[in-house]
Length: 256
Image (cartoon, rainbow, N blue to C red):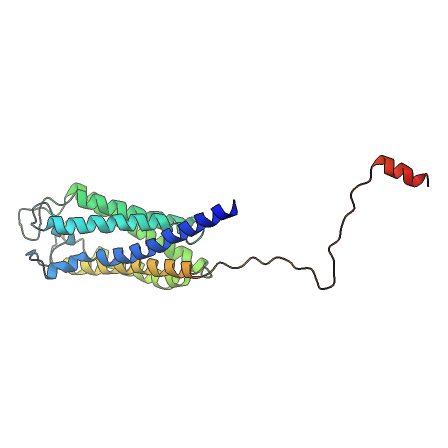
């Protein structure tokens, strides 16, 4: 019934509006590593990975690990709610699904942490197999989200919110890729200064989440185009078709 459809539409719109704010909050929470400025972690941010903050032997792993878990859950929930916001196009939907996968992989990244912090322990290997695998999944889903939505947006720039992604998406994709590549030094036996590009990479990811939140907000603020119904010209009446006559009526007419 129409009233029921109206309630469903209002409920869906309310959930999507809430997801926009959740995504914006996740963009800020994703960079909770800034708390290391005031929390005595004793890690040098220039030469340490952010994931060392919640390594198994770190005293504040409960703080940074739980913040990361909350952020990852918020990202997945917001992405699943917003996945149909830009229409039913395959690339747009896949981009939102990739973002949800990014959040899920981030949860696994926290649940399978480094066993130690290699930047402060010389005997600690920087390569932790399970954590390295989950980190690779995080980056795979992130770059898939960036690439898919950046590819979709210029081809559907008339959709509300798409033009903003079309402008900023490719630039953020390049920045995220370059900053990510600059962090692999310790994995190749050349540690040092990898903490700077990784933290820059996290800022880029936060900007991507905030960009999606702004684009989704624009899509929700723009009213749907009204459906125009054809109106008869002035002075004309709709044509009325007479019902078909029965055989008896046709016989009576011929006998007159």
